[in-house]
Length: 334
Image 1 (cartoon, rainbow, N blue to C red):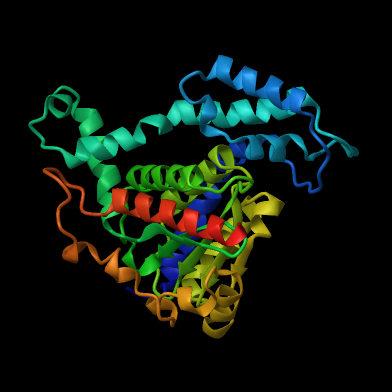
Image 2: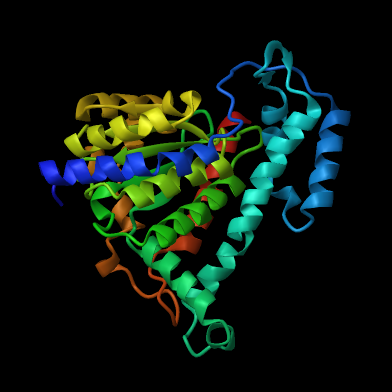
């Protein structure tokens, strides 16, 4: 894929991003760029847990105690000398759960099963719109451009992004839904005490920027996954990536923007060797290392069909491998 954009393409993308700023700023309302930590009592944790269970009985256990404590323990943006008021933290947690409810995030694994079945299945024929949504999400998974594989030394699951596999003209909703599905799968596999993940992107040959997709992705990250990104390493640096980041960084909350690290090829390898669980041995071949990710996540044309539907990406195998990798990391701590 092309690594350069024409002047006309650059101007068009920049204009579309600017036209979307008002829409994105709605997602940032109430965001705090503060760091620090204060104690939270077990009784306060129980109160927040009970409220979540009352308001969101079907999904209340999605948020771990560690994540709830990480939200509640932060300084109050209006007075950094004190902790966030409990009702303030509760609202932030409820906002995340409300967003999940609005996008039907809890149903996304069921959509994988739906798309993996035949079009003649009763659940597919009785709800053609839902079946179309499921197929669009699975089509995005099938590119094999994004997947979980392994952990860092500190116990953060690693989300790999291979931009050369991304489509030039993506179905923005399908792509974002696939990323929500993947994010939730990674969160469920986090070790106790871990609340965020690391993303490593091979950005040598990204497709042209798609403003609609980028804005939807950022909104989902800010509204549905606040404080979930520990670090994003993008290597090597390309002109398209620099252009995209120059557009998007001003839109991000400060603490999110600070987690984006752009590296050259050699610097990227040094950083990966520093943070990945097995050091240099975990660096994938497409970033100059020995680990063959294509064994598990080949290009779509080399993937077998997983069922009677459209799923080719090994979603269930990915989840099982991540669970085993989690056990392996936990074993190093015992």
